[in-house]
Amino acid sequence: MKLIWVGIALLVATISVGVGCGPKEKYCYEEMETCSQRAGMIAADAAWEATPDADAPAGTCFNSTGDPIPCG
Image (cartoon, rainbow, N blue to C red; front, side):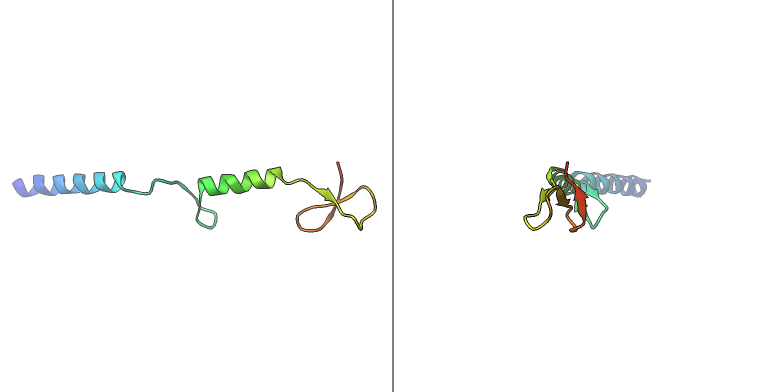
């Protein structure tokens, strides 16, 4: 019976060490980036604005892939 209690105590100790010393950052499972990295990339994408091209006719803007879009 003592062996069973020792086994249970070791199991509980192992689980608590794993939880206490586990990863501190949550991962967003898109190319294994942390959630804070992913949030920063989303914020940077949201801050990007279309700018007119000097060689393009007035009123033409381009998105990040180079496709023309209406300026607004």
